[in-house]
Length: 383
Image (cartoon, rainbow, N blue to C red; front, side, top):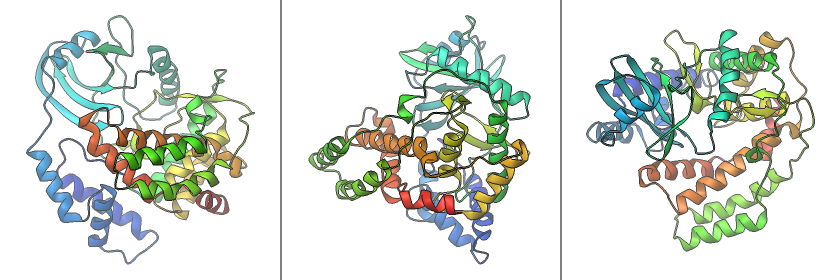
């Protein structure tokens, strides 16, 4: 599901609708602009284009305000200079709200991060990012604090800062063929770096909840009176089928980005892809990262054969080969989806941050309406 920035514009949405129209016409040439607008509205979690326009107008009248002194505290922590211009919200992400800060030294993007993303973890991602940029991948430039840290704590929250760059929206879904080809090329570049990695694979990508935990989750949702509790219960057979997909992660582990997914990619001014997130980098095999990637880029909202072909073409152009994939190649993608779904439902039942309530509710609705399925993964392989 897509999420509106904090200060969206109708012009921004009209461009997205035209991008989506072009993508839809790749498989359905007769698609109209009205149909594309309707599909975009649904991606944003509202019923139609008129409701989406109303939401833009509502946000324009209710722009979030920065906490008093936050910008000054961030500027001091990261050595950004004296705050001299507008401090404005950019977007709400699963990790929190991002802010644009202007100082006498330039413009910056301040990003909240999960507590587990330590400075050491950020250094791992920056190592991969620097090597990728040297090979032509576009990415924001990170800022180090005067003490040389990439992550610093400000007001009991972990933050990092990037130099500001102008980018467009994240790619539309279904993925346009040209975008899929560029994404495949990006993955190919990252994999061809082949940076050895001896650290264990992130447990988030290997450990799954059992039947009892999922049953308890449904019961918890019902006790909380959630209107989607029955939909969650209906998801359990799908969860059970996905959990039958298993594999050991034996193989050559390399340093992977792990989250080059639509939410973490933007379209630059010259139509290049900008990879915005590197802090989740860690050990994976090539096959497992490709399996997870294809679930995001070629299976949203359903199997997209043209995107799959474009992704593969871009990858082969960058590496000269395409690995042999099988159903077990999706183990990391499956585990990530199961854990993301489980954790998102938990937060929707008992929200920890009122500011994120609408965000989480929309995400749960999308996860329940369009789940990952074993059949969908089999179709990817057949495609």
